Image (tube, rainbow, N blue to C red; front, side, top):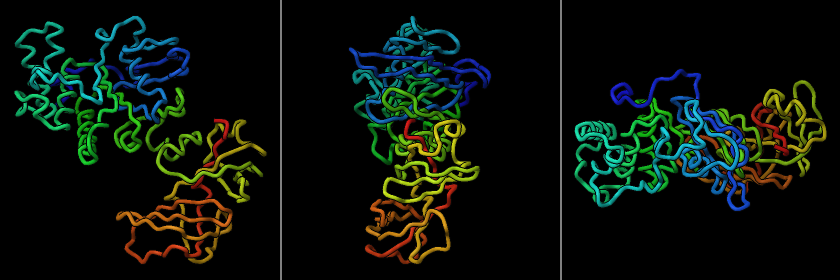
Length: 382
């Protein structure tokens, strides 16, 4: 189903933002849940707000939907302030984790509910419901009731009900959280396909990193009510801007230390346990170069498990090579995890692809090493 056929939303240029949050705060009885959030969500993108429980992401979504009012700041949708606009007048619809379907209504009547509230004519309602059913491939289930269909099918009905009103923005609150792993993977693909077909702006809240990484054009990582970083999945994984983002997105090995030396090419960090780690200057962001990374500064070095090499013999490298003992080997099919205790006392995780070779056994002396461009120095103050 194409965007033209569904007539969802109106056409705007790529440079326009569908949703803008400007210095938004939300305070509940003395607790600040959202702290000065600035967001620009572009028209037609799949945007995810990702973070741990209690970080403020669902509150942010509820502010956009109008279910909560900001304590300060402004919320704009397609250039119009929404601060005084009630939820039912906003050009958005929300899909909840619980789906919120009416058990006493059939699938088609659930989808038609919002149209009837708006007093849309019978013929137009039937046409729009039929379109929505085709969109989510639920035509054969139109006369069934929610308790007669599976969780994945209920999710499709919830999506159809949200889209039948032709919102400018679709809000998704942990939409796949109630599904099992296999069904969740399937629905990730279906949601991505639906987004591509419609061209509607999707804003999703999730705590699931893989879900956000696999589906989103851009991601806002949230922590303690603030936005830590906004970027593409690749940007936030390869170039996290804070120790929190590095640790929360994917897996990493973190070392606390101080900058011992800086020149035009390298940063040398001495960790709290005496390791000397060399970081290539080109991996450091401009913001950190301009005042946050300096000789004596407290930093955290991040090294992703897949960036690290293993050797049973001392490799011919002069930087970032450390000796340890292999403590555990975890065979995962497509890849293998190695847990190594270094002589410094640090424990590291290494992930390598499965090459079907003989795996080293636990308690084997081993060397680990990585290239200086494959680690990051992050300011502890961020």
